[in-house]
Image 1 (tube, protein in one colour):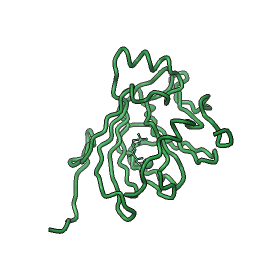
Image 2 (cartoon, protein in one colour):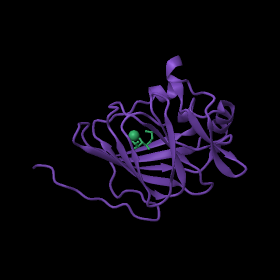
Image 3 (cartoon, rainbow, N blue to C red):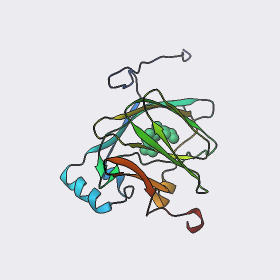
Image 4 (cartoon, rainbow, N blue to C red):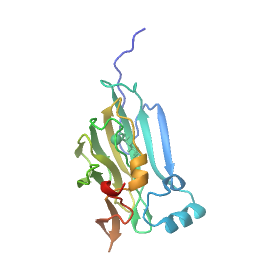
Length: 195
Ligand code: S6P
Ligand code: ZN
């Protein structure tokens, strides 16, 4: 029988999808190299290897024309003064864009191009963010208590380039200063010309 159109629900209060094909959990120990304060991360991993974020994937074939979907949940917390966040990535197919629709919580999307341009956009419930082709993206939860939850949709063939971010980092990181989020230079960022 041929495949049929399908629906699923994303309902409050937790906004987890009623259907998902994969559930990924990224713990502190998966985040080595991503947070600026490596010492603080190491200590936290030893004390309690907390979940940093989770992804519920609604999988589709990895071909252009399909749309993969998911729910990303970034938990509240900090490593040193840096807020919990996703690893972040470029799409392997750099021309593939992505839609984020924020369902719950407060946060920031940190974005950049390989050429060193950067942008940070605030996320709050009911806000849509369009991630342009070529822009690497990382979700940051800046709330002290609540999960940051977003629905995402992106081209089936997009793929994930994590290596570039692992090697070079994001140009900007988000830290807490006096109880408020502040965007600062990433001491680990390696500019394209030095890569
Ligand atoms: C996929 C999309 C999201 C992220 C998720 C986790 O293109 O941007 O589903 O995969 O937010 O982030 P990351 O950086 O670990 O893939
Ligand atoms: Zn993406």
